Image (cartoon, rainbow over all chains, first blue to last red; front, side, top):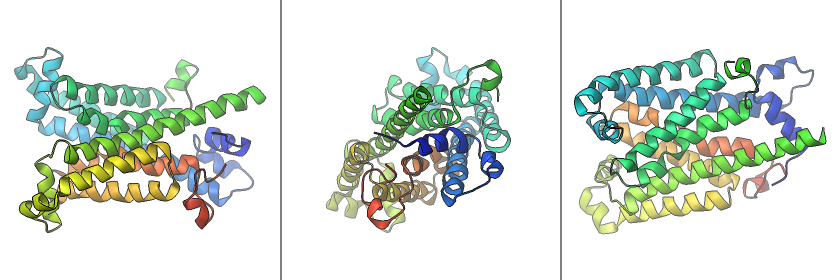
Length: 158
Length: 142
């Protein structure tokens, strides 16, 4: 699959920094449509996914107990840990959605999304439960790809 | 400059592949709930549409709907045609909305935001088609 130089610049610059649109002399409809929309689509998806998932941790969910069991955590402790995990999920979701999509958080989201999806078949659920959740880790990873891999600690925290 | 662009091209290709896998996974996995697992919760979603369990059973709607989702997911993996990606976005939003409509917590809908957005993100990354014919073509911008 080949892409033109314009598209590469578009992906590297405009999408990763929507504010760059405003700095440029000429703004095309494509810039506005792709740059802002794609950035916010990914951002809202990551935020909603983690806030929604975290909500189940706060209200607790019996289906989660076997997932803790995979890691050797007994059910009594699992019920206590659910709200903690839920709070972390919601906090990170709100950070990405309302503050800024920090690269390190996006990487955490991708890893956590893959880990939690993997726990399902490992706890005895059908493999399809894992397959259906591919976007849970792929979308945060895609957002990280679009923002660009960090080359320094400062970039990872920005 | 050449090296930088070559590197970016690889990145974009990987992003395209990553999103294709995400879209296919969401569709194939969800389709398997109906076609392979015959999940009981699906009867509740059909009930929202006015289709009772006996009707769904008699018409084999779980297998038909699930099978269609699996097929469309595989098509999107190989041929991510823009019009298909747009239809899949609408389909995912519609089917996920059935969850709260069937009495499940709203969080079930919200948690699946990535599943709904994945086809639309792939469409944006591949390029929004600039003409009607490109909606039915392969790469909109290439």
